[in-house]
Image (cartoon, rainbow, N blue to C red):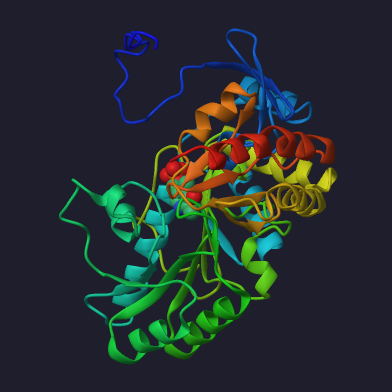
Length: 403
Ligand SMILES: *Cc1c(COP(=O)(O)O)cnc(C)c1O
């Protein structure tokens, strides 16, 4: 037996220990590939957690951002913002919605949505508005968004939580019907079309349509958190479009700027004019660099038909995983859609993160036992097959070993 290893020296003594980090530092990337500072190469199955839509160092994005940085990065929201109008118009065209507010992160987009819901309630005379939220939901780590989140680990230590949330299980129409009947203070329903951090759990098409109907009947806002599942990841611009419905409020972030921090709250007519001057704002929101990143990301996605790519490569990746894993003891299922896939195992598998990295593949593990794949949307069929080839033997090995 080996002598117990000394704990490694802390390489980042001045960085707060809020993350459990693997030891490798990534130095650069190209397409779906990353290199660490020792020169080791990795296939990127994580995309910076569904952020690097166009992969790394995209040859069309890089010069556009360089040009923008050389021109102007930031101006404040005191002045007219033509690039905000341009990106807002594009998001409205793609979603069928009518107005957008820009911020920098997912939680901030969700804070905006929560404020819209509360003000929508106050405007119609509801003094203590409540919002329907979901078990296993994840909406961010600010005090309000962690209160909306349905994960006790995210909330632990940060009470008192923000009030005004009613929690229901996903895909249970009766549960939300009961809330509708019993709670006159509800003003909105807030859900992820596909729960990301909660383990890649999809709202069914029937459920989304039922919730849309209930929101219409009750004059509630339907607020769909597409921070992770939006921006082409499922093979449509927004995951709710598979159900043929439209939300009233749609927070976006992660993939919208291909790595530049960009968040947005896109609203339909029922919600677009709820906030007025002085109601909301954020210093960095909608700055020219962020807007240029969003505009170019969407433009390049269209040019390179990345929605079709996400759908077809995602389907091939799912098939490849199933071919290898079907019938393996301890494998549960592959969930999700397009290039947002979860491989559910029967037991916690966090250690696979490090094992996959050692084998040259970046992945993540959510909800303890679900391997999450959210690669760049430029992933090729050959690269999808490489993910299968690297990952499946690791999974089989892991499941064959004693827990
Ligand atoms: C990541 C995520 C958030 C939070 O986004 P941040 O940019 O980390 O604040 C919110 N909602 C969903 C669905 C997410 O996946």
